[in-house]
Length: 454
Image (cartoon, one colour):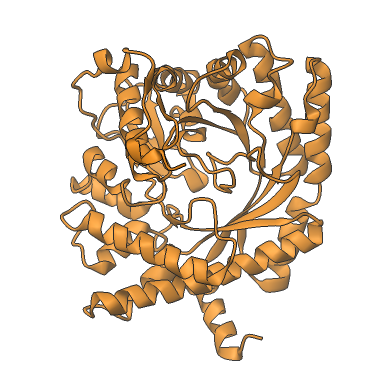
């Protein structure tokens, strides 16, 4: 049982410090929907998603009312569609019909996003996987709620540079296809190395083939809670700082565990994982950058930033794993520029650049996330940035990702506006030195020596 002090403490975290459950994500396997007839496949996908998730939003609202815990998003992830559509889809346009079916099902059950329009090509691409990748620009331009991801590398397999090269082109095409909305389609497309099967956060969520038929994953977020807690140990030792972050992460994770178990019981679907990621929003006081500055930086991006982020990420994980036996997904600190007011301010002040963000991705939970770049950035340059991030993930045995938005018609210093949780972003300059000869070599970058552990 929890005592009155703990109840009051949790209420304060919710009411004053912006603690929320960022998402309840229902993962749904579509493997049993596979059919060689495209019309039948679409019908089976729609029926299964709307059948399993019909009460997801309703149950989320019930838990909010019962416990007073805000649940910001209710979402769905599905089996990578490149696998599901391989027997029926013979053209990119065929895959687009599946994207529209996912969108229609998501709208029917009233979730805000559905993830899994995905391909896992870390070692090579099947014809179907290449077709899906080539369909992404049209799929994201013609749908509202569909999110897409492509895994191009892993520590075990190396980096598929053919896929990396292709993704640079696909990102450019997606930006062009959605240019009337500040290239919004690119905000729903993420390129991974070491993508996890159970990530509840968009745009990278998909339901891995090792998962059960359906599962409930919960993502919790509390940057404001952590910042408020460490204000109490300002000027004290690193030991005091670390203990405070761990204890706070423990409390936040327990909230996520409670919500996950309640949702699992009410929906009759197994509980999967709690993802404790400090995922910021554009709201003031809900910023990872502000935590780093409270730790002691004058401005995020300055000297000490990478060390402070490494400390924060590690202590969040340590606190989380003590609170739940099933911490998973990404779990740590996110650094999306457009979704974090402190990051935006640092870019505008000139203290945070793309190269420093890349260094920070070595120690955070994801990678170069929600970063707007000039619309005339070459496709090969985008591929080079993806390759750099994939190399960090591969060598360090961690998940890294790239979500870049080459905003058509925009130049460095301009602003792009996405709205809602996606926020807004200053367009950041990109090093114009060409890497075309590198990314056009083709083939694979081999797995690192430490991948051979059998």
